[in-house]
Image 1: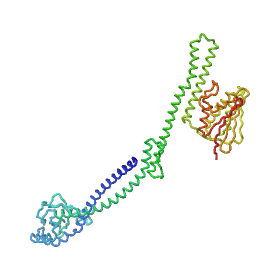
Image 2: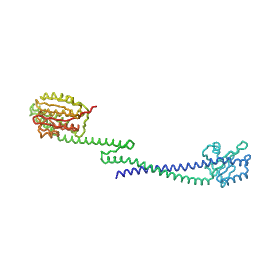
Image 3: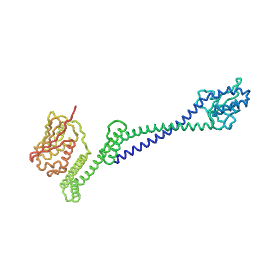
Image 4: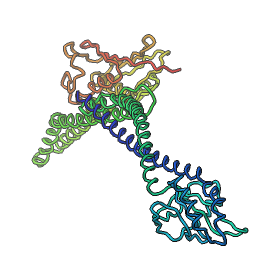
Length: 490
């Protein structure tokens, strides 16, 4: 329900913004429409009445002789024109723009002179747009007009200047036109607004609907479900959000797992160090105190013996610390196998050669039994090297002079290679076999062992998705067996 509310809230917010923007542009469009229609009406009016002054020149010019106008004749003509077309104001100007005669409503004229620049522009450019000139009745205001030059014997004697709409007519016509255009524009814009709103809201709904899985995945991840991911079904921009989020979530989850592993390693090490190293440290401390407190009572041979014990205890302590670190890292997944194809035969030969000197010194024989058709295996070579060394070390401890250690490699079908480390030593009791791979289990008194070697072997083999087995008979020897996957080399 919360997810649905979040989706609806987002949809409402986006829709509200969209409608506000749409209304804003509708108002602007309405304003532009009314203003454009008004300007268009004015321009049409001026173009239609462009020749109005020219048509009057033939009637008015005979009344003008040497710049003097017949007042009676002019009054009759202007009066007749005002009766026929009361919306115009007629002015007779001298060559400098001074008003000589006029016919206007209420006979209210406040200007004595009209600016001739727009009049000349009107007369010189037939293709002009809207041109405004002075309104003699309203100083500072400008109106559309018609004009013509009055010529006598090739000389300019004045202008006929007609303002196309009186003040009262302009106000009334603009009100009517504005009302009509406004109504038409409002109706048109409302229809467009409704259609655009419906189409826009559908588009927003479609887009926000696609965002719903994004919100759901993010919310689940935020609430602690680190496995939550956003389903990706395409390659558009919204789907790319899911891809980026999933990559980020994978990185965060990996980092959290690493932090958990580090924390587990820390607790494991603290526990192991505090518990497992207590005995060798106590032994070293005891012999060191004896040497310090009773060195005058000890013979030279006794002092040497105690120093040798301390030295060997330090060596075992160092080895135990190293193995504790190694096992703790393996158990907390801080060390992961980096598998690659390699020759297990060559690795076995190298290890057997390294141990040959030590085995000969003890009188133990190390043999390798390797099938000539052994394929490459896919594993972490350094980890498998560690496994073989631990197993050989373990066999060497329990073999006496004349015993043998055999390392055998045998392909099993097409997918696995079997590795065996067998000795003819003392063997292990059957009841002890289930506990061999437990940490610190030794099975018999053995001051040289840390009890961690076989636990490390077991963990490494587990990381390779395999298993190790042990077979033993007391007094006849022990065999450790594990499998490694064959590498697919094309």
